Length: 293
Image (cartoon, rainbow, N blue to C red; front, side):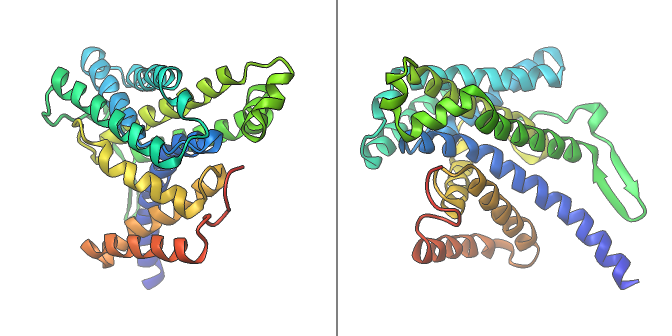
């Protein structure tokens, strides 16, 4: 009887922990890619996440098509990310981290201000698609179909990013340009175009993440990226700045801490999160898997 109850509890909360971990991992991908390219600390990533969520919300309200909402959420942040990289971010490569932080911090406020001006600061929600709103019941275990959908899509994105970075020509050029951009340019390759693509891709994934996670329990509002940007940096600090696989480890650790910790630590879970960050920065400042790939 005890084993059955424990299994039911672990299955239910394990899926919640997995979905929360994947949420943190997906969001932090853009931070990892940006820092991995030229050590740019992109604090505007939370604003790009918010823009994607709003783009998805507008399309979903107009068409009631969640797939289109996901596509437009990705596209909105992708295009804005590409524009920001071309006009501003590219000028910050190899600059002091403090300068990049301050400029992207200012960019975040500008983007939030524009959204407030256009859409107001009113709270909005994206309703869960009707086809995915039901639950799978297996004995005492009840699992939301949408949460399983979120997990599957997130894993597919991570696998796709792994293939993109390690198996494609573009990914190889980006990785080579990260190590030595001058050598790549000598070969006649305009590495800046590939950096723009990678930055935009990370921004698009953040926007997609905003639309994907909204139906679970996230309200839409202009400053919605302020909290998740904090957890995004916590993820990359734990795993290692600029390390793709490190962000996966960091996201899993943070997801497990926040989901299971909320059961027993309640409001004190935030204190333990900060303690964990302090311990890692003290013992291993470069993160679990080290620095840039």
